Image (cartoon, rainbow, N blue to C red; front, side, top):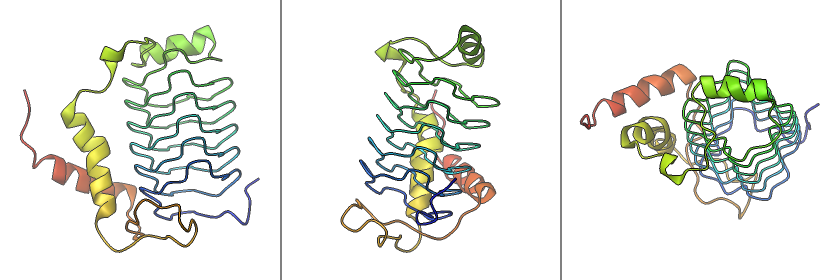
Length: 208
């Protein structure tokens, strides 16, 4: 059950500093939180379906029972986050960092975990761990595995943040004094974002 006083659906909160905020049971469907700081934020039971969190910082965040279906967590950091009972069905977790996270009863059905880091995470059954490994998940505490692919970061983290910056000012009224920058509140559909990403990405020279 979402909190009717916490409705941020389809709002652009990219780049905001929301660390330590209690956003439990908030309605954040289709919300944009690209590059936002959600360190130690409470998002228990929050509905973040189809939200964009490219490169977001969710270290030590509480996401117990959170609805994260089809969420974009490309390159996001969820170290030591509590995802007990969270639903990540269809989520995009490519290059996400979930090291030392609590993943008890977390649903990864249909999630893209290519190159996602799971080293030191807890709560996974042997079967789930095997499935995640087979899908490209990494279970090593090896710092050499950290992201070094410049093209990947340009396409899936930097470019979405640049696109979010294009336009007018964002919505600062909800978190006075807590924002690091105000970005565009203009709605951009997922398909539009993909087209814009590809256009900008294709303008960069190919690295070898």
